[in-house]
Picture 1 (spheres, one colour):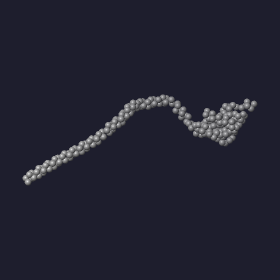
Picture 2 (tube, rainbow, N blue to C red):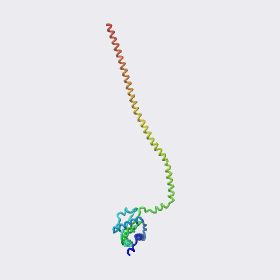
Picture 3 (cartoon, helix red, strand yellow):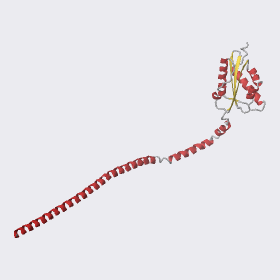
Length: 243
């Protein structure tokens, strides 16, 4: 009989979500919207608590739950959803989570373990709470239509730079320039050894000319000496004959 009276986990989750929003709206606070990712996380954690046999807070909730500016949770176990909600409201800490003005989203997960209902309530203010801005941006569909036109203009601008083929020619020209300069240097380099060779040849020729001139002078001097010697010999003979 007790099991027949049990709510399903889905019914328990809906009851707790409705109770949370009733507490908020009766005090002038905004109702919380249900976030599917928070529900999935809450159901998983409630199953973990049931397996452990006691309620506990997830120490890694800040990394396991994504996209939040403000984040909080209530966990507990009891005979049904109504008793659990009353227990949360009678605890100042849990009550503060339910009535936190900053929160905009909620996810409730329930799990039955026998006659014990384990519950996790997760509250969040997402980082991207500017949903209205997203709607306004999406609404002006005509403006996006104008955007394609602007996009077409950039495309034209891209066509203007299409003298990109010209860049292809410059690279070739640039490549030719270095090769030309290299060939010039290579052509110029060999010119220097010949120049030095010419210089060496010239110096050798001039040295040889000087040497030839000296030899001629020596020969001439020798001839003169021989002539002088001949004259002297001839004069000596004449003197001998006279005597």
